[in-house]
Image (cartoon, rainbow, N blue to C red; front, side, top):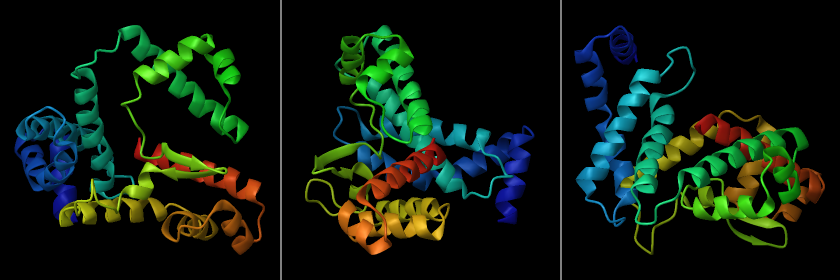
Amino acid sequence: MEHFRELMERAHGGDKTARDALVSENLGLVHAIARRFEHRGHDREEIFQIGCIGLMKAVDKFDLSLNLAFSTYAVPMIMGEIRRFLRDDGMVKVSRTLKENAYKIAKEKERLTRELGREPDLSEVSAATGLGTEEIVMAMEANREVESIYQPVYERDGDELLMIDQLCGGDGGREEPEKEAVLNHMVIEQLLGLLEERERRLIRLRYFEGKTQSETAAAMGMTQVQVSRTEKKILLRLRENLS
């Protein structure tokens, strides 16, 4: 830990050798993440190089005063850099206006969710952004590739399955590489450590034990509505810690 802190302080002071050392020591993160983006029409080495840019940004911006492991901070930055590259370099080009609208919509949805304690409906997003409902739908559809790990991938009877639920599973029936599984576990445990005990219990019941919202409510002495609202607030906080 002292070695890392010393290197980071030197790097932030302009020492290129220390910065290069930090990048070199954390290349394993880039390799593990780059594997997730294979078969996207780009050479793996190209994806790796883009991931390295994200790693260098993480080194430059990391705040030592944060009580946070560097890997927890670096992983979303590396993934974000690769996703931006794949989005902007994709075969289907999205207009600048649609991208700007999508960004505006995302920011307003986050703000409204915090204020309302629930997901805003289309009319509320429209009023907040000044965009028509048709413009909102077009922007969201055009930018669908830019996904959050907390985005619902399946919904039934008010119960949602999120992308993060799949982190510890395989891809297309193939077993996930050991390093990637460790990386996923590490990030999830770091995030759970930010929660209070009752919040951790709710998340473990929902996403580790596979309980429905109704079953979780019964186990915790809550209503299904309370579980739904609390769960969304928790996931929003966790997402903010990954951004």
